[in-house]
View 1 (cartoon, helix red, strand yellow):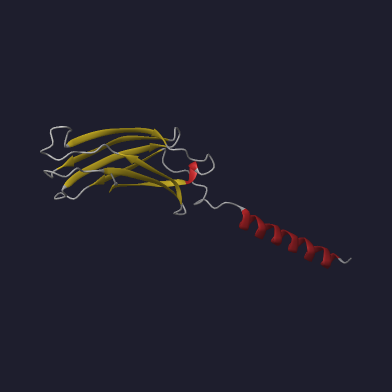
View 2: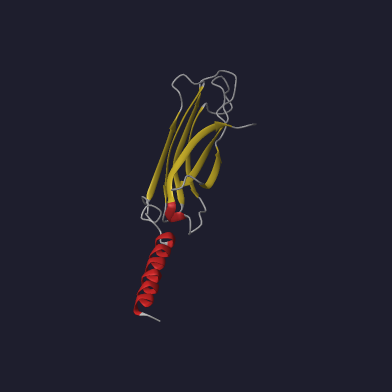
Length: 148
């Protein structure tokens, strides 16, 4: 084998190894660690018949969701039934975890059997895989109607 062939094969091997390491090595964007605590808030329209708001935070280290949700019913004879939906989304915009927290019913303002305004504390664990947890990018929160 000539010296020229040996050099060609060596250069080809180095170029191939460099190309493979570029393809398989994680990029800085995919290997980045996000904030240790993520926040989410949701607020209803001012003139909604059922006003609501929620302020939530998710602690990455403990996988704990904490915060509170507030609901106030402005209707006289109709109850207000809501639930909080929390979604943790990874850096590639895929849903990692979804949780629903059912809130107590806020009765109508003329109903003496239960309150028309409620403040519900939220404190629960959101189970997230340890492999996915470092890539959680943001938290989406929404309050929606729930059936009876």
